[in-house]
Length: 204
Ligand code: GAR
Image 1 (cartoon, helix red, strand yellow):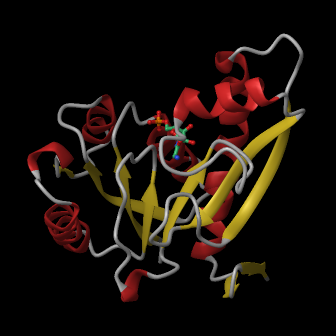
Image 2 (tube, helix red, strand yellow):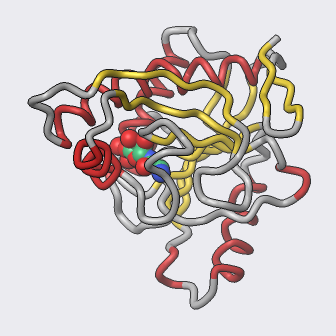
């Protein structure tokens, strides 16, 4: 039985598209049960609709508090009965209820614990890496806990930072890596091969 995914996004949905494509070619044994966006009218929703995937908007700006937003968000997520919640460019902090501990994953476009945390997303990350003078960057897939970019790390990979890099050229290299690592992590989860031991994720 394919596992059920709820994919949460806030933007263009290239990460969602990659997951849909990898499911389509049989690399990932899952089905996208639903897509939820925290911003209205983003292209990620359009991509889902094109594939007949149910969509919902739970717009962060419409809620005065994080608590109110999270209550609505979890009602939407639970409506899709997911085995795994996949963050795909989701730009809001999500509360993790106890029954979803180690059942929410995120991909961050750098090597956690460097260049991560609040405000570190998209091109901000790559600019920070280049400005710092780091020689490598990469991508990190991790379980989500109640802090930004903090939970146990499932997979990490590296890419070089080249002398002539701009945030855009580095982003391209990192995103190519993300497109490999994220489906791999989902498949490992689907096969029941991930065991969390404190901060360490053992892959069996
Ligand atoms: C991805 O590069 C992902 O690593 C990053 O946002 C992009 C989403 O692109 N996520 C973060 O920075 C999380 N801290 P998309 O909206 O086109 O899927």
